[in-house]
Length: 443
Image (tube, rainbow, N blue to C red; front, side):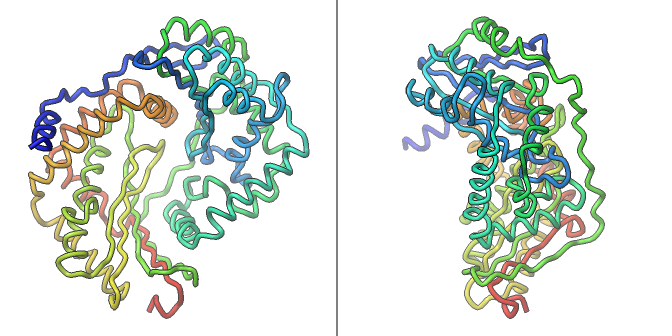
């Protein structure tokens, strides 16, 4: 009974579940400032996002964005190597950084009265990084070891690299964020400083501060510490090579004896969330759940894992957050005695049936309620809210787009899902991969 009451309460909850008090500013040097008030706890999340990620790297220097992320924890004019993280920890906080295709971000989570200290240190490393050749050698070895652990020692990760390279023939999304190993090995001081000098500039950055703060107080501190940094006059327009229209299906077989269970995966080029045009992306969120969400209710799960027992796993996935075209993915792990050819034929039949038949409206309402619940629960995560805005703004969206997204999700109809499925689920714009331990498994 309590579950039913909870579900009814969620169904009655307001659709505009963003709930955040958001104030924005732009400093004279072009730096954007976003303040998200949340006064429930005396905590603040301080983040600086740069509109530069691995897809913005110059040719031949793959991995330099992630390399520079590591190097930013080295010395500056006023701090010793590692001092920033030590100061954050000494003040009871936590810090880290991350690199994606479209952005690099640095953050600290501390008591609200330590915000000024965080700004002072972060602004310092935006403009005053001081590297040595020893730093370069040390961190280059660190990122190479990171690649060894996460990619070279993981057959699935190596297969995903090849699949992504096949999906994106011209766009930088086809290169791994961490970089190709042979290019990482040659990254040097000049590569790092050239990227730093060009992109680590206030007019290429977004400051996001979320928590127990007042907007005017944040603005005053931002002007004091970030506002004095000169803008980069030669910051280039954010240009990306476009992916040519895909007119033929692509296939590959990845063989690695470390593969414990053969499986197949397929990716389709798909639209991302665009400023003022997020409806297709919202429909694709529903499609991923309807086609390959829960094994107990999704089309692939019910047909392949239960009805025919063709597969031991099936799923679909879609990430709407991307500056340029993203992908919609499906994966099937065949059951014992089922060949990959048979599993793929069964998968294709499920997709064909999905496109041919009407969508269960009860399923639509179930997903709608789940999405509404997740949006409401997310309001309790201050860092998650800050990340939501930072990622969106570095990937071409606006504050208004972020706040409109929950309502757009709630407005998706079965007809919207069917229309976007017909547009995206076309074999001619897909890449299908078989991942097997031996050539014999691919026959």
